[in-house]
Each structure stands twice: as C-alpha cells, then as structure tokens.
Image (cartoon, rainbow, N blue to C red; front, side, top):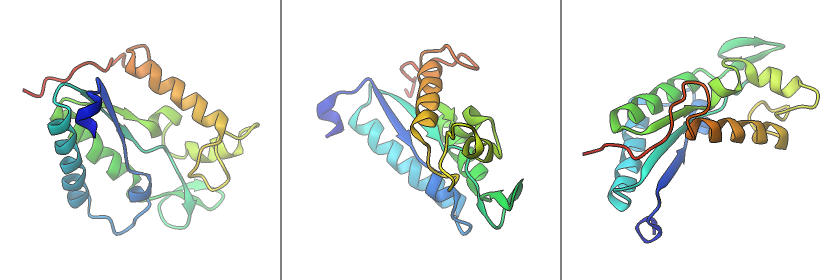
Length: 157
C-alpha cells in the first residue's frame, strides 16, 4: 500500500510501550525496527524517512527517580538510543520526543503544569502537549528547530 501512495516522507514513531518493558531485549528491538525500515525502503525507495523517538514518561516504581514516587522507565533511554543509531545508519531523520519535552523527568513537569500538558499517567499527552510537540516536530522537519536538521531525501544509495 505504501508504494501506491508514492510518499515523499514516511514517519515512523515507535518506542513508548517498548521503553516501559523492563525485560526488553534492545538488540532484538533494533533488529525488529530495522526490518520495518527495510520494508518502507523497499516500498518507497525515493521517500525520506523520519524516525520519532518516544516522549518522556514516568511511572511509579523502578527507574531513575523523578520525584513524588515517579521514575523514568529503565529502557526508555535505551529505546531512544536504538532508534537514534538506526536512523543515523540509514541516513534517516531522527527526532527525540523526550528531548523536545525537556529531557528526563519532563513528564512530571508536563503532568503538573497549569494547564496540564500530559495526563496524570505520565504517558499520554493532553491536546495542549500534543500541539506543542507537533509544532516542535514541524519546525525540526523544516529545519527551523534546535539543530536545524531539515528532513530531506536521504542518500541510502
């Protein structure tokens, strides 16, 4: 179906659920996502690929402490690293949703903001948070945001 659309850009967003999995095999995860990228490249060889790393998140329990009993899930940073490295190896654009929020423990700040940008679960964005991050992603794709790394056709040749 992708080939029929002839897209200029394919955006792949992964990692939130995987980042919350304490038992995740990061090498296996990298192979799985690499396989998805292979399929996209075969179906749309002229398309640019943008990979979105997961937003910051927190949960009660294990992980790096964020305050109030909330902690960063242990594999969230690892998942971002896998996606960042894969994007670099494939000549794809990478956007770090967690960094765009402000880094580790930003989910706490976003959930407690007035008005809140994230739900109290520290996983899901409220409309205002989604709007803020979509604007940041747009700016990054257009080369106007931090790093000014515009998304253009990748040289995968």
